Image (cartoon, rainbow, N blue to C red; front, side, top):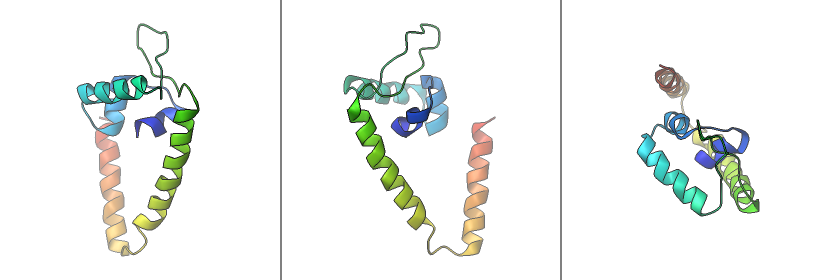
Length: 102
């Protein structure tokens, strides 16, 4: 999720922790692994230290593969769900979004 989000956005670790619903320490560990493996880099802003997009082709290739999987999963995830279950799912997603913005 971090890689997908950072494809089109910049974010601090605190912002990422809110987006992926993990604590900052967990995000710090994930970010360090991604950084050490060459997927992302820090911007030179010492105040907020936002994370930039990917440093080389490795990150872009990974994202291209992930986006295909995500698109496929989205298309099939709700395929055989009844309307009442889809409505409940939408209500749950809306509540999660509302909780994140508080």
